Structure formats: C-alpha cells, structure tokens
Image 1 (tube, rainbow, N blue to C red):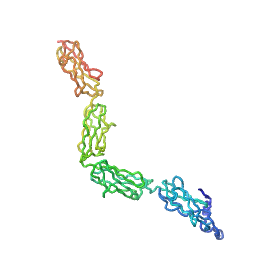
Image 2: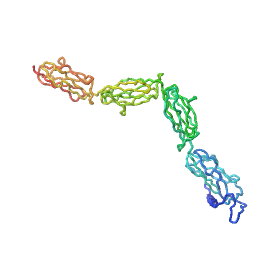
Image 3: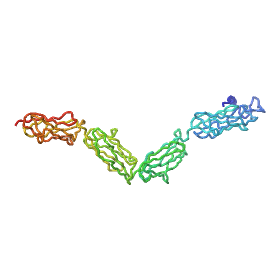
Length: 477
C-alpha cells in the first residue's frame, strides 16, 4: 500500500528555491521553454489539506490531490486513471471514507490528473492526525483534527432537581437541563425532551398547554428550559426526566404533589413493652392518608423517643432518639428497630408530619429484668415481748442486675421451726408475698412465740444469690 515518497522531498526543495509549480523554471539570463513532453513526477495537494471536524461529523471539504512536475510546466500525456490511495490512521483519532466505511479509499485521477477522495467522517476520538495520499508519483500529507468541542456528550441537571407543589397547584420552577460537550461547554441547538412520569397511585403533572412531554432546543449556553407545569389532583411523589438525542443517559427530577389535608394515624397497637436492655418487638408505625382517605406515598414522618423524668427510654438503631422515614406505597411509615435503655419505667414516643398539628403518641414501657438482689428494709432489727406482735412489719426490696425494682416477684419469708421464733398471721412461720410496682414486698404482721431469745427470719426470691435476713429478739415478759 505504501508508495514511493521521495519525489515529495524533491518538490519541497524546489519550492524552497522559489520555483512555482505551473510555471517554467527560470535560469540566469532568461527563460527556458517548457519541454514538448512533460510527464508528472510528483503529487500535490489541491484542496482539503488542513481541516477540523467535530467528532462523528463529516469534514466539509473533500480531500483533493493532483499530479504535477517539479519543473512547474504544464503536464502532457494521458493523466486520467492514475491510482491514488488515501490512507487514514487505523486507530486513535481518525475517520472513515463513505464508500468503503474504512480508513482506506482508492481513487483514480480524472483527465486533468486530479483525484478527489470520497467524503470523510471523523470518528469518536479527539486529536490531530494525518491522512496520506499515495501514488506512483509520490505521497502528500493532509493534516486533520477531530474535535469534541460543540459535540453534545452529556445532559446535566440545572436548577432544582427536587421540588413540590400542592395538588392542582403550579410548580415554582420549570425543569432545566444543560447539554455540554466533552470539554464541559454548553452546546446550542440540541433537542431536549422533558417527560413527566406518574407515581404509584397516579400522582403526576402536565405542562401548561397540555401533555406530559415537551421538546425544547438548547440556547447559546446549552440550557433547555421546559414549559411551566401543574400538579394533578393526586397527592404523592413522582419523577420527571430530560433526555437528548444520541445521549444514552437521561437525567431525573424528584417531584411531589402535596395534599391539602392529611391524616396521621396509628397502625397496630400504640403500646408495647420490652425488657431493659432488650429490643422492642415491633417498630413504631404510622399511616398517612389524604383528604379522600387514600394512602400517601413518600410523606415524611418523624419518630421521636421521649425519655421519662426517671430516665426510662429507648433509642433507635444507631443510638439516635429521632428518625425520619418516608411512607411506602401503602402510606405506611415504619421506624427503625428500637432498643430499651437500662432504666425501667414508662415513657412515650411521637410521630409527627409537616402540616399536621397533633402528633401521634405511643406508650412504651421498659420492664425490669429478673431478680438479682433482695435487700431487707425497715424492721431489719427489732424486738418484741414473747407472745407479742413486732411493731414494724418485715419488708424487702427486690431489684434486677441494673438496680431496677422488680414488680411481681414472689418473696418467701421464713421463721425458724424451733426455739425462739414467731409466726405470720395465723401462726404460719412461712409466708409468700409478691412485690409491688416499686419492687417492695411487705410481710403480714409477725408475732413472737413463747420462747425468749434471738433468731433470724430470712427472705428469699428466685434469682437472688443471697437472702435477706431480719435479726429479731423475743424478750422475756
């Protein structure tokens, strides 16, 4: 494919010496006449030698080369049908010829010795390169460049990508998109199509003048601006998009029709319990409905955990006391899982929604753990005359491992079976009593028996390693 290129160098030398092609060579003292027979010995560029084209676009001027003789005289003889090979780079910045769809095209000269290449289109690689025209009479080099400037490459969002409007209301801003080339410059005159979608339950909008689609040409800065658009009668989220021809990736917009009236309601039970330090069985849940009782998707519900004055409370996963959640397609918002802290007691949680004045309330309770400690309270040391009632009733406090009082724990009070002792109520020496809400168990009145002396009454509860003891004395009458 490669032809002799030496004649090109000779032509350059001749031109550098001031010889004009197409005119006879001059010599000292006069002019020399052109020869009667003057065959071509070189190839020259006639047109299209230095050009730039956008990526993927054709070059405006066809490549043209012609036969010539370095003596500058008119050519003689048969000049048509001489084969010329036009060869562009096989890789990188280059292009393709129309007739071959490749980087090579072979053309014959016409009767005047001129060869015109087929239309040539730049490929998608930017940069400078050369196309060589090769023949038996030499080679010439055409200097070309592919540029990305002014070629639409990307659509980017401009203006607001997220906005909302009340149902049947007009959105504050139109949709905006900018088309840029590979250098980030705006491209003018590109057709951009805006499309308004529909949400799960039919939330959407239409452009002023009707329809959910609009096509706009970019301005001198590459920006396209949609017509104004108006929300339909259905509340909820939906999306819109902007796309341009030959650009595969569109851009999206998040839109939301807000309801004029909304209702926040509890879903499932609003009260639940969990053991201190453990997770609650269910998340907090709330449903959001519009004025017609239809579920609202995408409504922003904020759940807040409010600890009690005593410190009982909880946190969502991640140790946060607040979480904001969007409702799903059924209008339901579910909080993250929540975990009780280490303090037993009741506290509340709330769910709030913008535009709804009254929050939704949840009643929560941290339950104490299993008994770990039992401690004697009042009456731990006292005395009474034989066969007399002790003045203070025996009482204990039961707490869990985190020092929370344990309600409902069964405490067993036991007096000695022999010797100095006593009895609860009707002469029983053992009695079982459940702790109250404060973790306190109070035994019935205790009466000394007839034997004087000191002894211990013990109180036990399942789970506590050590019992509580009361040091009592029966005094002789």
